[in-house]
Every structure is written in structure tokens, then in C-alpha cells.
Picture 1 (spheres, rainbow, N blue to C red):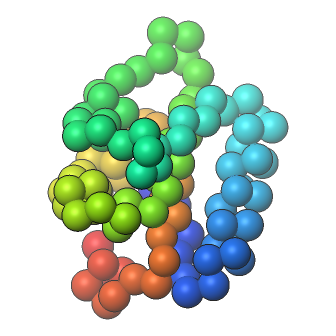
Picture 2: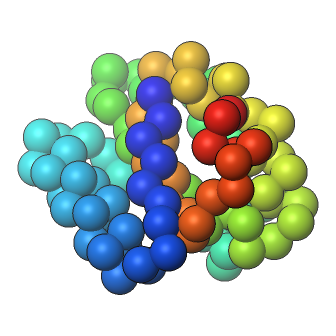
Length: 103
């Protein structure tokens, strides 16, 4: 499942996203941050293909993938797999153009 928090008011967007993440953390979900510093090609393949041995839920924060072209392209390419994954993905982004909103 993917939850996208986006908009031009970055403070409000980030507050809403992290409020949701903290709520999920309180439910025992493991949180993994993927941002511009930690992104590596193939991160989504590992995230959608991996499963916890103990049945723990994992929530991935995808923090502003548009910050680099390669990361953005990989994110868009993996949207169907992210949506179908048993893991949860929270994406934080700025304002989206109409084509991106439709995906």
C-alpha cells in the first residue's frame, strides 16, 4: 500500500506524513527511511521482495524521490509493485503535476 503526502506547503505535508508514521510506530510497525542520502538503486526490489521472518510489518518512508532523476524514475517504475506489496510505503513529495497524480 502507498500513502502519498504531497503539496506545496512542505511543513504541513511533512507534519501530516510523520504524524501518520508515528501513529503506525505506536502500533509496532518497523520504520525504514529512504531519503536522498540513503537511496541506492534497487532499494525497491529489496523492499517489495523481502518478508520478515517474524511477521513484523514494515513501513518505508520514501522522502522526496524527485530530489534526483534516477530515484524519481525508479519510484515511478515501481509504483505498481509498491501498491501491491505487503509492506506499507509513505511517500513525501512536493507539488505533483497532473500526470503524476494520475499514477
